[in-house]
Image (cartoon, rainbow, N blue to C red; front, side):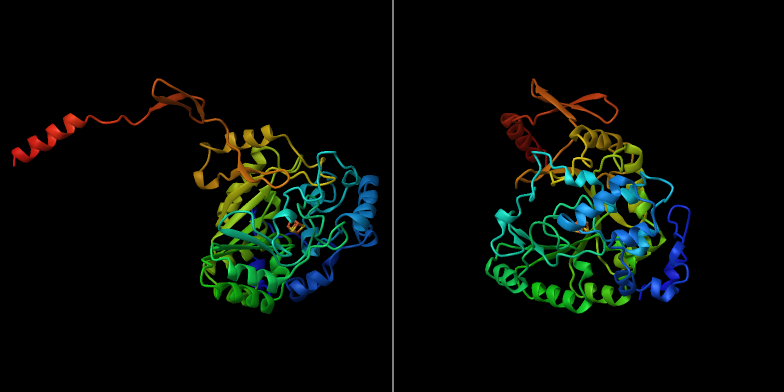
Length: 401
Ligand code: SF4
């Protein structure tokens, strides 16, 4: 059970939202993640009984739930939606629009080319010393911009084939692997026992140095962060967690409480944000987000360019938008607050960092630089050194002794 006392730590920056139509639900039920999972909103009928939908949303739900990525929203996350704002950034991330049915010719079912790098089902081995292990195809709520929408939720064109034991065998045999990232779906949807088994099996492999979990659970369903989950996670250090937060409104009293419990368990926390058009594509929103993350002891880690997922053109921005955001963060706030902007090379190129051009050239033995305010500087290349002067200095100083 999510400790109830954390619910009360509400502040203007980290509000706790009213339960609205669930106001008769007891705190005990509301704070129980099993209750949250059992009461997910997953049909058009349930959604329409709570929200007046636009025609685009109604058609989007019908299309997506049959052939792309299911509708699912936890009651907790649903309460964050501003019902008077059709462009609410929470609403746009979890309620489908008919735009999901419009495929751009550049879009792909598997935009990161993961299937081609799977030596066994559900295990992506792309980089030399680390692997990505897909642990489940389910999440408590589904993001409409999900990179793995082809297989997550069970209604898309593919099914994620998961084979834990084959993946563990592969990792045991490949001694060059030192880092395992557990993802999905969302690994924190698994029971404590299953997580303990998986983390324990990986920890028993001598060449595995670090474990990582990628999860959106502290945002979609912070009630899952229980003392017993933390006790399991704490057993398997060094363990890092990357959460996925896209908008400052997602950081509430409840999510902050869950993140505090993880941080207090000694888990270093990072955040990944997907850059989304009309949701978080301004420097002001990103500045608020990174500051709130740091207040939750979460380091902003990556800002992702939205992948070329099928039916995602309504979410994508230009690369210049992301570069401009980084330019407005770097120098204007703490270095800790600035994420690395990256794009996954379409089709399987892996992560490619994108930075504003602070290096402007090189001339006459000097690198030319520009700082965050546009002021120009230069930095000289190392000189080869004066060998005869050096020998002369050695002789002279030894002679002076
Ligand atoms: S939580 Fe992650 S895996 Fe689940 S729908 Fe969102 S992006 Fe996809």
